[in-house]
View (tube, rainbow, N blue to C red):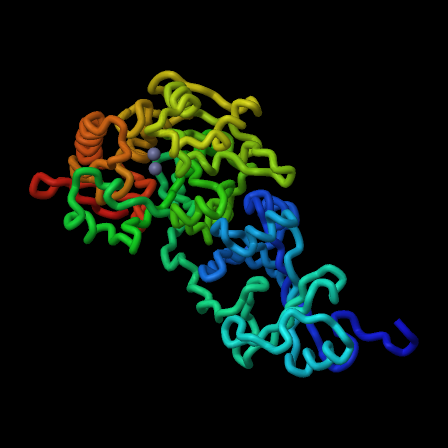
Amino acid sequence: MTKGTRVPSGRVRGDMKAVLDHVGIAVKDLGAALAFYRDALGLEIEPAEDVPSQRVRAHLVPAGGAHLELLEATAPDSPIAAFLNARGPGLHHITLSVEDLDAAIAQLKARGARLIDERPRPGALGSRIAFIHPSAAHGVLVELKQSSADSRQSTVVGQTSVAPAPERPAPASRLSAPVVRYPLGDLELISVCDGFFRLDGGAMFGVVPKPLWAPKAPPDERNRITLAMRPLIVRGARTMIIDAGVGDKENAKFGEIFGLDRARHLDHTLAEAGLSVEDIDVVLATHLHFDHAGGFTVRGADGRVRPRFPRAQYVVRRGEWEDATHANERNRASYLADNYVPLAEAGVLQLVDDDQTIMPGVRVRRTGGHTMHHQIVMIESGGKAAAYVADLIPTTAHLPNPWIMAYDLYPLETLAAKHALVQEAVEREMLIFFDHDPSVAAGYIRHEDGKPHLIPH
Ligand SMILES: [Zn+2]
Ligand SMILES: [Zn+2]
């Protein structure tokens, strides 16, 4: 730089007035990336934005005036996948905002800078963009962007932004699960949430024909219905969490298949409840399927999976542990070893054999049915009773006896256990917690015309 050419930082010499808009980072393992950018650096991650035309999912991370953009491939033919294969994870591009893109291109041409785009092309939300060749920018792919007057927040993903991206979708969570506190004698029960996912509606309702279930659980275009993941906190002699949702270790393909919506997840709802992972003394598993046990572990910045609740003992039924660690072709897709094997390795696993009290007021009861050793949690204090019924009755739509998931390994066991529990719930006026209901966390069951009905709490 010669004398008299100093320019304020963030500004390009001359009249281009380029301002850093964002830094795009290609990410291979989103869980590990979040462990660093969110957990270690303490930055906030905005809800993910899918750009289907480019098979890319962008996670925006505000950082001062600009932001980081973690870019995840959602298909093997995504440009980000190609980039990752060729170069590995890391800096993908930087985007500079300019006021006059035509003038900026002219200025660069006049100085002999090699361009990918000799003239502007359309970007997202009415913006115009042009890419500078990395050879001109010392190895960095640089995108210049001129926002349309009313779209200063627009972002464009990567080099292949040829078509205007769709409007950023409203965060998929128009669904929301409030944190609700339920006093129960000397205990406090707090319903939290790890977000939502989708499973095939036919599989969720087994032998029940679609015309009967579809009005209760409207399917999407892929026949999937929306389900919540609602772990339950029990505060008493100790602080317990029952199940922990799906967690964030899985990749984009998994998220896509299961329509994961974790814009607001367990960390958020724990914080709303005034708790953090350090406050949990006991983690109790109803069973080890990924939508219940995924949140038991996290992937650290070093890529290793460790227990998510650093002080907790994890209580798992021995039979369920045996089945999960010896999965067969029928149940293998539901059991992901990273969700629970690291617990044994860390020495925080406690296996229980029978129905028993886990802490004062909290007992486990084997139901079988869904899995051979699936258990529910019976909670009692001050003459009041509640039950966390997990996958015995996943949603309020599953209250009628024959409405049983096709996922269940032993449906006749489910039938018997559900019939007995519903009877008991009616007689004892038990508060029933539903893990997967998209809108109801808990309620009481009454019989009307011989059929079970739910009275939401
Ligand atoms: Zn299950
Ligand atoms: Zn489940």
